[in-house]
Amino acid sequence: MIKKIDKIAITGGKGGTGKSTISILLANSLTRQGRKVILCDCDVECPNDYLLLGEKLTKPLAKTFAEFPKLDKKKCDKCVSLNEEEHASKKTPLVRSGICVRTCRNNAIFQAPGEYPVFIKDLCSACGACQIVCPKKAIFTQKETTGKIFSNKINSQLWLVTGKAKPRLEETSPIVKQTKKIALKLAKKVGADLILFDTAAGTHCSVISALLGCRTAYAVTEPTPMGNYDLNLILDLCQKIKLPVKIILNQANLGDKKEIQKTAQKFGIKIEKGIPYSEKLVKAYSKGLLAEFKIPEIESISLK
Ligand code: SF4
Ligand code: SF4
Image 1 (cartoon, helix red, strand yellow):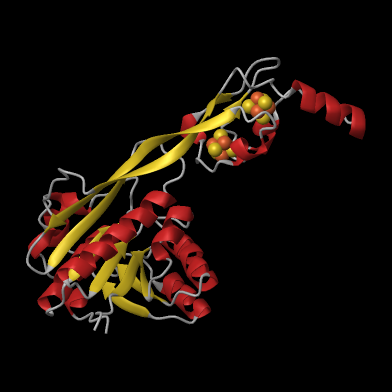
Image 2 (image 1 turned 90 degrees about the vertical axis):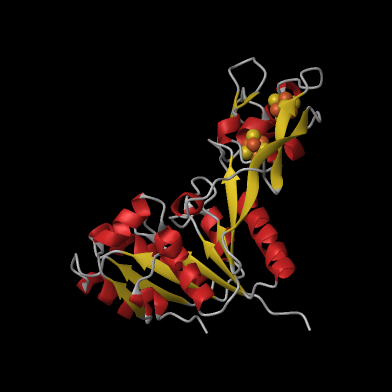
C-alpha cells in the first residue's frame, strides 16, 4: 500500500517573525514523536533553514531552468509595418514601439524610438507572451539555469530540501514548484510520512505555489502592528485558496496581543500556540544550533 504523505505549510505574511525557526523546531519535535519528516525550504530567494541547522549546500540534486527571450534582429522589423497597418485601419495615433513591448506586463522590454527592442532579464518572468505575439517570429528562447535544489540528511528521521534561486530573478514560483516535487520524490524514497513546507514571507506567487496542495498551514506572526497587518493578508489568502490555517504567535509575551486575537476572531480561527521570547533560543538561532533545541510549546504540537 502506498503511504500517504501529509503536507503542512509554515507561513506568515511578515518576514522576521520566526517562521524558519518554528519550522525547524517543529520538524525536530515531530521526529522525536517518531515521524519521518522532510523539511522543504521554499523561501527560494533567501533560504536559511540550512544555516540554522548548521548545514552547507554543496552538491545540487537538481537544477531548475526557464526559457528567456532573445531577439533575432534579421527577422525583427521593429513592428513598423504592423504599427502602420493599425494606424491606417483604426485611425489611431502611430505608435513607435513593438507589440512585444506593449504586451509585456513586466515592463521587461525597452525599445527606444526606431531601435530594436532590448530584453531586461532582471524584470523578465519568462512567461513567453512576447514570443507568441511577435508577428515576425523574431523572438526565440534560450534555456537558462534559474536555480538549484539541494538535499541534506540531518539525521535518521529528518531531511532538508532547499530550493535556491539565482539572484535577481523576477519569477521564482517555478523553482518553488520544482523544489516541492523533489521533496515529494525524496519523501517517497525514504518513506517519510510528512513534508513541512517553509514558505517565503508575503503573499506573492511563490508563497501561493508553496501553499497549494497542503492539508493545513500555520501562520507565524508576532504581536506588533505590522505582524497583525501582514497576518490579515496571509489569512485572507489562505481563505481564498481554501486552506485551513492556525496561528502561532511568536514572542507572545512581548507585545500587545489583543489585535492578533481580534484578527483570529474575525477569521474564525485559533491561536494554536503562543511562544514566549527566549534568550536561549535567540542564541541557538544566531549560532546555527537549532538542530537539538526544544521548547515545550512546539513539542506539544502533534499535527495529527
Ligand atoms: S514584436 Fe517582433 S517584430 Fe515587433 S518589435 Fe518585437 S521582436 Fe520586433
Ligand atoms: S517573456 Fe514575458 S516577461 Fe519576459 S520579456 Fe517576454 S513578455 Fe516580458
